[in-house]
Image (cartoon, rainbow, N blue to C red; front, side, top):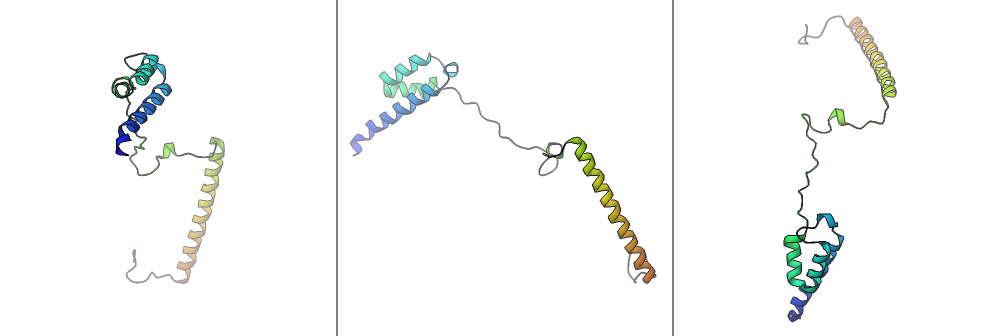
Length: 128
């Protein structure tokens, strides 16, 4: 079984390099024309395969990781996706402002009612 290992490795190298060479765009192949690399890999499987991996395969350009750089953690506000168009967003902002004004008025009325029932603040309370 171990006696067949070099043959299997040679076959794997041949298939890998041949497929890689065939799938590589012709303008990205280095040092020789694409057809010359294919012939070299097929005629001299070990030497041609190693030569393809070292000198013919396109140089890998390291991919820049897509990282969000922001002063705040999470999603930067100016890049936050929204489903609203500009005019609709304005209407939503108006509705939010109206709702906030209503909530503020309700809170102020509740504070006035509480002070009318108990005019003196408890001892130790802020503002006492």
